[in-house]
Amino acid sequence: MILPANPAANYLAHQSEIDRAIRRVLDGGTYILGQEVAAFEQEFARYLGVRHAIGVGNGTDALHIALRACGVGPGDAVLTVSHTAVATVAAIELAGAMPVLTDIDSATATLDANRIEDVIKKQGPRRLKAILPVHLYGHPADMPVIMGIAERHGLKVIEDCAQSHGAAVDGRKTGTWGHLAAFSFYPTKNLGALGDGGAVVTNDRQLAERARLLREYGWRERYVSDVPGLNSRLDEIQAAILRVKLPYLDEENARRRELARVYDITLAGVPITVPRSHRGVTHAYHQYVVRSERRDELRAFLKANSVGTLIHYPVPVHLQPAYRERVVLDGAGLAQTEAICRRILSLPMHPQLTNAQAQEVGDLIARWHRQPPGPP
Image (spheres, rainbow, N blue to C red):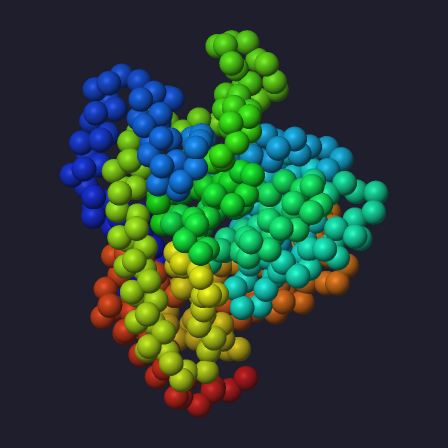
């Protein structure tokens, strides 16, 4: 069977190095915020080209801490998208702020920068404090435009980089554009641990210092809280695993792009929409997401032929039971968001996938489209 990303396969690809790294931590006797975390923070910051990286417990906490480090709290509003993992919106609420959801660009499924100015004008008594673009599926949002708007209106920008490790715009990596950025190291990510993990990154020394305080009870001195904080610490074993895997990230992202090229070629001429990169973008292809008017039928056909697929994400946040009637929507509506969620399908995409397997999946899709539709 051809499956979506499998953390076990990624572990086996680096097994001997990971096993030695884990043994190093166990022998060292320090398991929380020790040398491995400090070393990974330095190495990840250097990889991205930022001054500071702060390891935290998971990607949701990274967003929450980044928002609070910017001073976002009760009474504030944060602009983001509804087509995202629910963690994006959950983090805004954890900070005490109100999510304001706008629509997406139909080509990239990321925040439609053309909508931002209108949303700012319509906020009225709510105080829009920040913009939170999501680099969905590994394609960056339009950061040059977003940063220009934010600067004109005095807004903070926090990038959600949970799916964009190594992606770039004009050679500048995601995570280096905003005032802060949040990364997840969930096991299926392009850079994934073998458990939960995350990081906040920034070039601003004061924001970095505040994020470090927030991740551990607000302590500058142990057991003395300077600010109200939380407990969100990247553990030593996960940091050691991430140190093993970080040097392979660019190589594995290049492998993802090669697989995307195989899909692109195989699916040329097939009546589905394949992902495209905007000019100047380096796509990380966390997911390879196609769109089909007969998505559910296609998914059932692939499953019957031993190909696993996923839908990222089937229900936009504003239509989910927990958030319906609780979030603020862009007054112009979320037509693109609601339309895309009915059509998207994530095909298998991970570095352990072979070109032959990608070709097989593409051939199956092409074959299915040559068949006449079944009865309604």
